[in-house]
Image: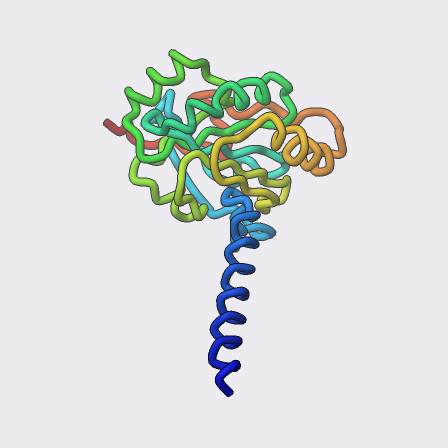
Length: 201
């Protein structure tokens, strides 16, 4: 009986050490999302470059596309930006920026300084759309298929390795490596999927 008093605490300690060791091997950015395999949340947001023009989620149906959540106040966003720029040059898929809880002037100055890789950026001033997407840290990146279903989420700065090993192969699969989707509606365009709203401050 005396030996059990020592064996049981030792066994519990070893189990805890095992859980800790397993946890240390996990990639903290590989966070499962309940939205994977589900439709992307509906949104209607103003363009960063033209607040009088809004884009709806449904405007992207029929295209596989990438949503990159960023902000001028986000240090890791600056770290990942060269990789986002390089990806944009491949023209693999439309790249939409979601400018998260940011001041419009600061965001536009940031893009002018570092380069604007996005087909367009949307202004999520209050962060509600980001919250609906499950964003809890910036940057985050999503791949959304032609049916509007979220197929991939990455938390944290994007890297060349993740782009080449995960994002590009997935986009090839989603697009069958066919021709690129048609261009996005121009600022102030008149397609039914783009609504005009009052200019915000």
